[in-house]
Image (cartoon, rainbow over all chains, first blue to last red; front, side, top):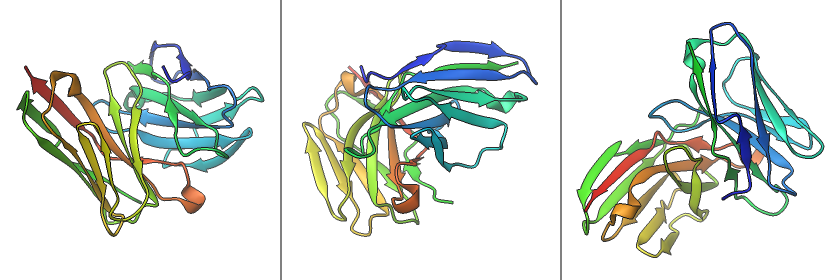
Amino acid sequence: ETGVTQSPTHLIKTRGQQVTLRCSSQSGHNTVSWYQQALGQGPQFIFQYYREEENGRGNFPPRFSGLQFPNYSSELNVNALELDDSALYLCASRDITHTDTQYFGPGTRLTVL
Amino acid sequence: TQLLEQSPQFLSIQEGENLTVYCNSSSVFSSLQWYRQEPGEGPVLLVTVVTGGEVKKLKRLTFQFGDARKDSSLHITAAQPGDTGLYLCAGDAGGTSYGKLTFGQGTILTVHP
């Protein structure tokens, strides 16, 4: 148990739809990162938020966006879904001032049909 | 773009055998982490190595960071069925990219009783 929770566990959408995935960080963690893990691959960094501001972005288009809230929960929004967006979406939280260790949630499995 | 090449991609061995997983890059990382991921769960951190040439041991697992901080290895002695899982290496470039991990594609390890 890492103390990081994600919802929903599984989600099925169709092409062109929009989706919002949610992450609840460990208490006191001020940084959250989102990763996309395609089947059979390692996770790929999407973006990171620190104190509600985006603090770095990977090679993902603008239709991937995020929010971090004052209580350190966060959202990943994906617009205009494509088939290739089907993946496991992971969030990871940490207290950037105290540790390098990122604690991953169990992920949300998104299927786009 | 930083890349981490992980090998082998698949490893199927008998209980009691030894194995080594490799993680190589042409880029320098400020630290390198090894994770283990079970089906339906997020990656769980095993170890972080930060100093070139560093060797860390965690029971039957030995982790090494290359002198130039571009490569790493994970060696498991006397593998057990409980070691079965997906092993991932992840590099942190540090600086402005601090915390934004670059993952290898993973090694699926199966240990047969």
